[in-house]
Image 1 (spheres, helix red, strand yellow):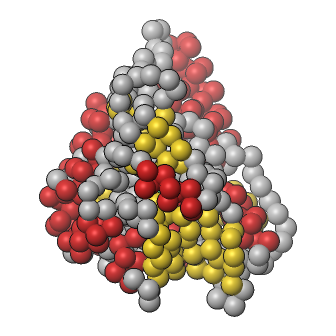
Image 2: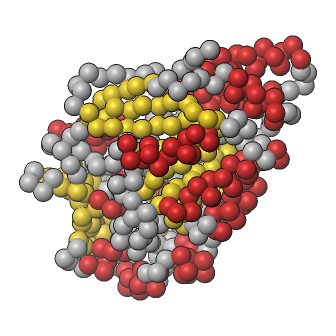
Image 3: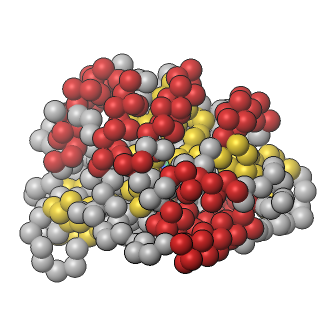
Length: 466
Ligand SMILES: Cc1cc2nc3c(=O)[nH]c(=O)nc-3n(C[C@H](O)[C@H](O)[C@H](O)COP(=O)(O)OP(=O)(O)OC[C@H]3O[C@@H](n4cnc5c(N)ncnc54)[C@H](O)[C@@H]3O)c2cc1C
């Protein structure tokens, strides 16, 4: 039987439900075991991150409409101030009891240079909205992550990335920034002006000040053809080296308990014939959940139920302008940990992570994600001076993610991994000193920008100071 990826998931879900209806009793959804982290005293409407793992009750919230307003707020406000983009980070970068500052009103393409293909962009602009705006100006982001809901400032502050061995994170395409310091002063930086600040500010976790404008190096608009296919995981691993050469952007997933994976590759194309497949990724993930709920008592049966319907390697094709191709809708919420390991450790680390998610007690059914990111020279970039293999493990938002993430972190540490700043991790300043050669230089710049720690909440104190 040859099925494409969508038909497979549909059948796997139906088949499993049928098996379980006739053979099982008492199998149902588990109850929520996830307890969110709450900051501040509950009152009024809480601030929540995307996954719901972080909740905060700040005294004040502001949404300034201009750089001058940002300066006034920063000068007048006492206590901790944390900027928020679109709240898509899993780690507790934003929560604090005093002030949360949204930059959502500082958005849009403010100017562009058609010769250099650069654009100055309001820091609160959502990546998704930028696509059309840049296109109208003859430009396009060079690479994108797998969703486009993030703000540009939020994305670069955590070194948000897509995939592709020849492509860096979004931060690596920043060519200039404007930032409001803790004393309210506006400073500008690029590779010639305040170059040390520029090295620090392209990935800063919001610890240096409030970014109001970002200049990005872009390229002329381009089209992508996306190909996705299922393949036995061992074959995917063996061919990964070739696939990452063949495709502009290549990533792959492992489906726990099955021995099967899914490959995704983008290649540039001049074909203007637009093709979109119905996005079934949320349905697919819920099918995996259903299979786990019904057959999770027997990992063998669970794996067999899914692998029985696994297709040959028939490819599903989509095609459009780049910014319409990169992102998916993520409607099924989860909590995520992602570590960036040196590329030479990638496959060994992947194998250990596969063993972990296949462990019965972990109860993981969310696919594990593998991506490639090119090295850069940004002081706190997880890709600083090393080409990287990124591995992300996910836990359904209702399930306690700590058991999985704690064990996964131990594996990542053994492989010299650096955590994604916006995703869960348990590391503190002491570890980062060893992971980042320019750690002390960064801290010097931070102390100059914010001598009294106005931009440090508890999480940032742990991470930056220790
Ligand atoms: C469903 C989902 C999919 C994701 N996919 C990817 C992916 O493919 N690749 C990837 O690398 N990551 C991914 N992430 C992680 C996400 O890209 C990062 O956590 C990103 O930082 C979120 O952007 P945001 O605008 O929501 O920022 P927030 O989470 O709101 O903030 C992130 C950081 O930026 C700071 N910040 C925000 N605005 C400013 C400003 N104006 N000035 C100074 N500091 C500021 C905040 O203080 C905070 O430290 C994903 C997250 C989710 C929930």
